[in-house]
Amino acid sequence: MKTKTILVFSPAQPIQHHAFIERKLMDFFAEEPIRRVHMGCNGVLFDLCTAQESHYIKYNSPSKEKLRICQVCKTSRKATWRGFEQAFLDEHISEEDKSWVNSQMKQITPENISTFSIDGFKLGRFASYNFILRTKVHSMSSLSDASFEEFKADLRHTLFVYKGFTNYLKSNPIDLLFLYNPNYNANHVVKEVCKSKGIPFFYIHAGSSILDMYDGLYIFDGYTYEFQNRKINYFIENVDELNLPYSKYQGVLNNIAHIFKGSSSWVYSQAASSERSFDIERAFKLDRNKPTALFSMSSIDEAFAYDFANGNSEYIASIRKVFADQIVALSETIRFFAKNPQWQLIVRVHPREFPNKREGKLASAVEEYNKILSDLPPNVVVNLPEDKVSIYDLFEAIHLNITSWTVTGLESASFGIPTISTVEGLTLYPGRYVNYFPSDATDYFDEIGRVLCKEMKRDLSLVKKSFQWYLYDHNLAVLRFSVGEFWKYRTDFFSKVSRRLKRILKLPNKSYSRYSSGFRIEDSEKKLFQEYTRTFKPIFEQKAKFYPKEDFDSYFDKYFDGLIGILGPGTSTRLLTAEKQGMTQ
Image (cartoon, rainbow, N blue to C red; front, top):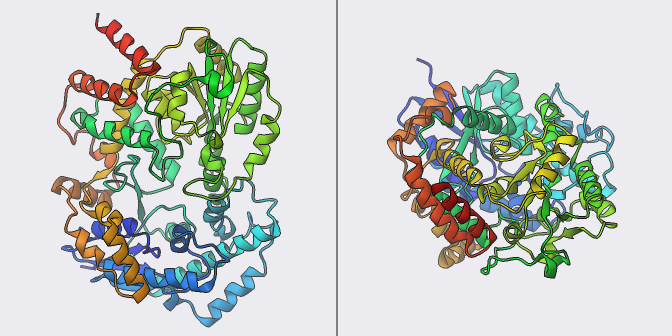
């Protein structure tokens, strides 16, 4: 019987929370007759790589800074993947291949990025993903000379990965590929090469619970948004039959409370204020007695990066939109409110578009926003990050939230706020289940009018639907386990000092064995993963009846009380409590 080979493509070892979990999942195959191979880089991607980006190293940073990350990567790899067969891209890239890369680099121009291909692979597009996220551009057709030079560093990296990996496969056949997020440049290349050869592949990605995103992982094949929508559609079509673990309501509440603090690097909003009240008259000189809508904008670069890197795929073309794009939606909405001075609109530009705690760049789209937002009617105002206003405070002052695809559409619905979503297919939550999705622009404006013509209300049914989704997404849609001491080790002061000294002295990082002992996973979850790698049956389908059937009403009452405790004294608490009491009388 032939021994199967699983290859883990994971060059970015300094991103330890990814590498650690990848290794733990591969340990599940230790008792099977499977050859386990880890593929990484031994320096060939020195010019620019994901590991360097994760440490805020730029393409034009000094070589000594890049070398420092290379050393960290190598020591981390030795500690994490001990016992695995090692393969390196470098070993499969000859001097002739390097000359080939140099010759290909002479062929790239700003005009042919979208069409630049090798052997049918759109490497110009594949190389764009990290670049777009890093630079926050919303077009690849008008790059400055400096930006184009930066993109070329990504392309060189991508060409080396392509050459090294294709050469490796010529003499090292594999049966299964495993990697993290498939959109990153290097991962995208490897995935597409395997796809062309009929080699099955799957990925992992952090779950959606900000508080414990690495205690629950998405595992999927295909493309990111296609997977998300398969997951969403399955939920909507089967929600009444799913055995949702309502008794795990506290985990949902803990995550919401964590988001309210605004401390996570994954939360772009300011922390919610302790008073839980917001005066729009004082903050924006609006009339507190007039019905107010919030237009919460989405960040464009993430959606554009996925769209461009995947070559305007059929999936992107199939996305349903009320308007051609967000700029049009914004312009038309402002025009509508200008004609309806009895109502008010707050336009909140997504904080990611500006320098923030995760990214230091200003998005190129801001220039277009400024053209629209520079001359506004008196009943329309702009909320920018410099205002230091939490979106969770704004929620207390609005009748309606309008969004394109940002997750605030789910958050507002989870507090009972009527919400309109204008894009279906890019949301990472069931937009048509918890939001109103208009059939066209006329329906969109009619729905705004229908909501704003009535007294402010909070819809308890939206709270219930959101609660169901959170439980599904945090439990049924992911492989659940516990990383134990991982985060404590990563954030403990003495551990940080120890790791820093080891980097300076170039000593191996022994942390893997330290927090590996704290890793916990139930045998039932382990079997789900093993079944997935054999059949590719989605985890969320396998888990449809995974949990025992529980009573919704009794646990929802506990969830509701906890949610009110998080919201604190304010408009949402008052309106939700009144509606719940009215429904029980």
